[in-house]
Image 1 (cartoon, rainbow, N blue to C red):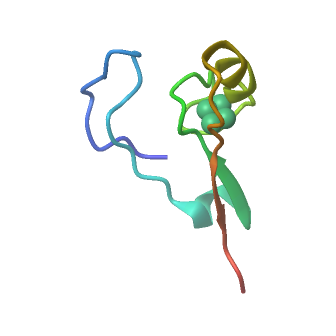
Image 2 (cartoon, rainbow, N blue to C red; image 1 turned 60 degrees about the vertical axis):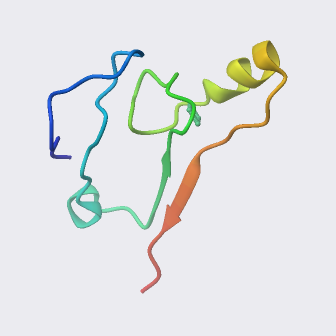
Image 3 (tube, protein in one colour; image 1 turned 45 degrees about the vertical axis):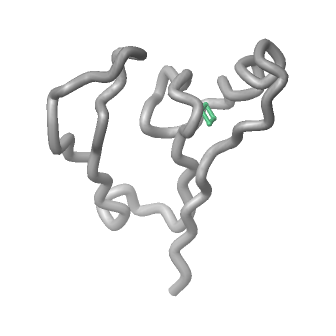
Length: 67
Ligand code: FES
């Protein structure tokens, strides 16, 4: 992963990032959309607690690479 900027938002996470999927050697990744993940930009399941606390239904963006 290569960060494009060191600017952080109010959750102390980078505003933008670039991920080289080929370097991860995976065909599927889950990107956090709730800003609560401790593995940001990847989803770690923290959205479940966020949803419970906020009566919301957020989940990750799933990106699949088909060959
Ligand atoms: Fe943020 Fe899963 S932890 S979407």
